[in-house]
Length: 133
Image (cartoon, rainbow, N blue to C red):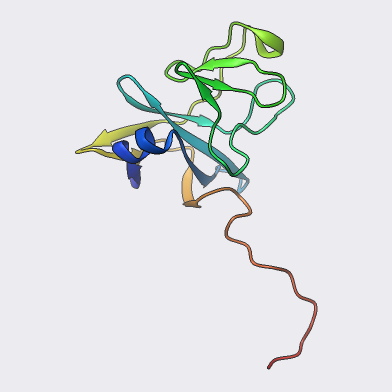
C-alpha cells in the first residue's frame, strides 16, 4: 500500500492529483476528491471525449460533483455516476483507495504509484545541447 495524502488535505484543497502506472506500463492520472465518507479516487478524465478534470488547477467541483470543464457533465464524487449532459448514463473508472488513520492509501493492485501531480509534472525541459557550464 502506498500512502498518498491526508484526508484533511483532500477536503481542504478540494482534490489531489497523482500519477500511477498500469500493468502494461502506461501512465494514468488519478484524482482524489472529497466524499461524505472520506475520499474517492477516479481516473482523471471524463467518460465523454476523455477531457481531463484536473488540468493543473484542481478538479472543478459543485455540490459534491465533479464538473467536466468541456461540456459541464456532472459526476457524483462518491459514486462516479453521471446523469446529465454529454456523459449521461456513464460512470467514471474508479481506483481503489482506503483510509488509514486519516491518510489515504492506494490499495488497487492494478496500479503502481509513480508520483504526486500529473503525468508530465516531473519532467524538466528537454535539451538537445551537449554543452555543460
